[in-house]
Length: 394
Image 1 (cartoon, helix red, strand yellow):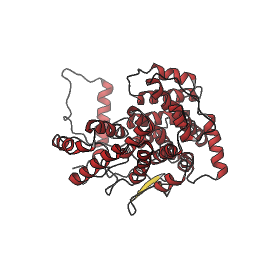
Image 2: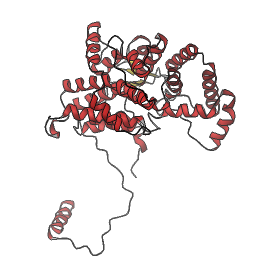
Image 3: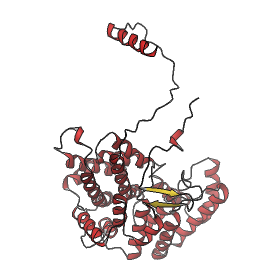
């Protein structure tokens, strides 16, 4: 009997030097660095450089990356036009997927056959930086157009995180808000062979192009069991309303055997190592915006759910209310995840291509035994092929 690993649980399919969870410290490591240390000390651009190159940048390297990134921040007119074709009541992940697909088509136009699609390392690094740079404009415009607002031009005098907030809200964010947002982007940037990253690596393994791999990863991230979970947390908060309603709400939810989004993780058994850093950022936002009721609801649901089920929060639990306090619409949360995770995706895509093998797992068939269509008469070529197959088997 074949040992089926549903969901590929426990299956090790390849090596990676991009990230790992250290079981001894329960820390998520990016290229060896604990992510909480990176979030406390680094701008997001430096972490992107680390994921792509394997080392943190020098001051000169960081300035060079920032100069390149700032040169690609603007939303191209044709990409904006494509986003405008997406219905306003569609999910904004559809806007992001459409925009990245068009950017890829524009960039690869005239490159020849599909045999030339995968690109060389320098080309793929340049493509990665361009996506990293333009995704804030895509995500920001998506929220603004749903609010009936015009897009805003990027600011060259602001770093990545501050500019992202500027393009979304049209005002310079306070340092506390920029810092909390920057930390969230770093925490979401990478997480080994998660569903979307693995999707991207599978696509890259066919020697398709980097943009196609990222588009596939976006599709995987849209699902509520992956990137969509941070949206679901806010929907739960909206359902509950206030801390005093947690007990009755949880009684009913558990009786209905509902999945409580924002809790549990396949990798972490002692709690998601990213949560303390994001919870600390959330606490600063609660104080900054004077919203103690958010913290009260957060703490009440966490304590009661952990007490009853022994399952701890994951990163989506604190990030959802943090993004809400900053001012992002709930539907924008998963596109924010894309803007962060594109750094990890592209690092993995380039790693896959550097030592490629087509990812093609097997399956165990459990359908009907061989059977034949009534009245079918095989032709001579088919009969000859069948005879050859029998001889080979014999």
